[in-house]
Length: 398
Ligand SMILES: [Zn+2]
Image (cartoon, rainbow, N blue to C red):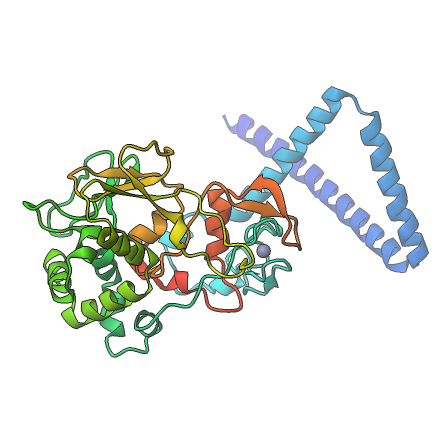
């Protein structure tokens, strides 16, 4: 046993010695290379880089299919190991915060400031963020989101006496005005107990009911807007969503009646068509109004088409009937999907994502024959630019 241990020690010391020799040789080589590079002229440096590039090019050009595959595989492993070794010692560090460590000195943690500015859309980004993250390198160009109407603007910006209360319950206030209901295709669990949790399973959907409620039912969602008088409306909203302040509900309600194009058009349609078989169709892909490219598109009169019952409708259109107890799913790529659910985020009924938004030639407004994806659309919308992005201030309303 003792002999074997001595033998192992001998082997180990030999390995250590050889490793030491290797390290020294590598250090000497590195030093020699550094010295020779420090003394080389610009011309010599350019020649060396050119020769190296040529050598690499020839070597890669001459390698077989298998050699190329092996080289790329080795390169991937080397890169992966390097990346892992950089991150491994910080694994789960966020869960074990140590106040004695000087985290700003860890290069892996410090991501810097948003100093990088996209030349196409002006988005501010962190240095390591991909160039196409904001606007797909100039291929996505959307109109600016317009200013909010009052009193919502002051409430959101903290300039209203009730701002604090409003912002702390912004989801409740939005729920008081949403025109569609929200649900999931599987039952929600854990919705009781001390800390009720809202859990979502499977697909999320938004549903729209009829414009008016049936006689035996109380008005809900969109129907509340057409109760006929302000007081009844505000009372119904406060009953449905308790905890909100009546005076705030009243002023926001007034704002929506004055500014929201859907509310205005629907109201007009109900007043002009007293028949019970009235149907209102909101087309799925309204096109921007020509000549107003930088103006956010709000539904024009002809875009909320009024069609009598019995017509055929495209699958993605929203068809609202005047009186029924039927709830209809709204397609998530419908241009009104966001505006009908997040009424206080899009108080004028501003357009959301739809499948027919064309990409543009980078740096121009010339449309090309490719469409903007939903991910690119929302990425563009959520970026920080020189003017404040008001969509980012909606706290838990998302
Ligand atoms: Zn950009």
